[in-house]
Length: 260
Image 1: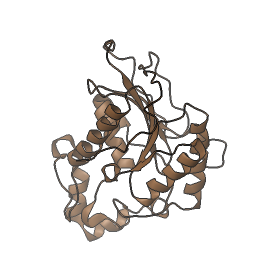
Image 2: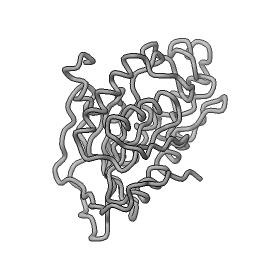
Image 3: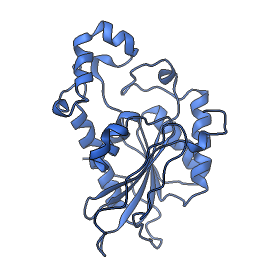
């Protein structure tokens, strides 16, 4: 069982986060309109955790269109600069009680940069936030994967279809439903640990797509563009398990910094 790390800030007074009544539109490349006003008002005892999920910065695998999966690739220089830019953006907002991240290098380094700039000492890496394991496809370029393992790639491709979400990728890979269960369960634990607080989570593209799908099932098809260092903001109730997606794919911090 995955357990979040101890929060050294739990002795401070917690102020509950309530879901926004107005849905802000994310700006910049890859921006998506977030969830509208909740259909049901929160109960008096429903306390939300604000979870800001950030995709890691750019890697050479991203630029080369390599299926990285759980390969432990590092940020490239542009990725480090992107991480610094998003860190400075987050530093202008409410200080997170903790930062959680995938333990893969590209996410862990992004999280370390954010933690340093934001002055957060509670940094918790965990394998539950890793990217989807892509089996035999890991390390291959998209085009090469189609040619070398057509049957395996077909399994990966049909896994995006709702009826085939239980299809595991051959070679030790995961299904989308397995990825969803792993990431959603861990974020629910984080919400229970940090009721009424704000936390930052650093993860990966497919993992974040699944979080968006869980929070906003009717619009899951539009939550596929999760750019590097994009902000994806959720309100999660550790009491009721209710999720609200407020923002998805927001990279407005990269606009004007030479990245867009």
